[in-house]
Image 1 (cartoon, rainbow, N blue to C red):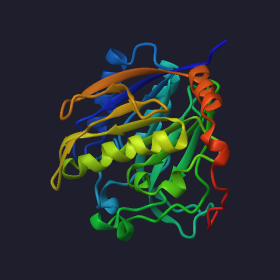
Image 2 (image 1 turned 45 degrees about the vertical axis):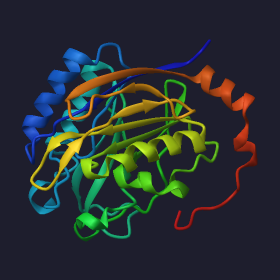
Image 3 (image 1 turned 135 degrees about the vertical axis):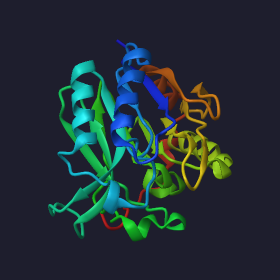
Image 4 (image 1 turned 30 degrees about the vertical axis):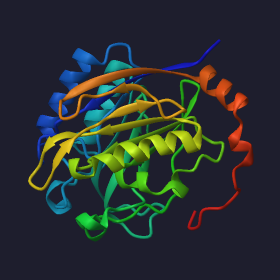
Length: 268
């Protein structure tokens, strides 16, 4: 029997540094638009926007945003992927403690998995304000699919995104400005084609004090072809259903992955 994964991807007009308002709006949109989706995907730093003032906006792991995501997942029975600016002073696997742009996969039972953004956007000063992740990339097993979620600037680094026969779906949550929208759309398609995997790109729309965002959110199949695309600049939730049988059938018919170069990524 074919395994299916139903997605609801929210191209959100994030309210600047307004956690309570953004949580409220996500709940409203989810209740109204998510339908029977198995997984809701929200943009990067959904609660605050891509703020470089972590001293002001970063939250604890027990804070409002993470608690909201957990409660929403448990109430709706849907998993959620997004990122949150986190203040974390508990030493885990990082080189240092501090502020992190932390991705969350929150399961319907309220259990979460995390990944700290590895590639920090230096042109925006992110590397000066947040600590980079140093752990292995995250692979989540959900509804029979292997999902590899990443954050925004990670998209520009194909080695880190490389499919080592360990995932079926790449998910990028982003705050990617309109001025570089061509790169966003092109790289999403490249990642799908080269990795023979579904790719989900969830980007915000609207404006913040420094940038405008067109969104250009999309769900792409393993050929880089769109299964769903958001209208540029418009806040909306788009839907797509992924088929594991279709993906595996394509990989069998066109097994380019068998000829891929083997490698080990440093600092893992």
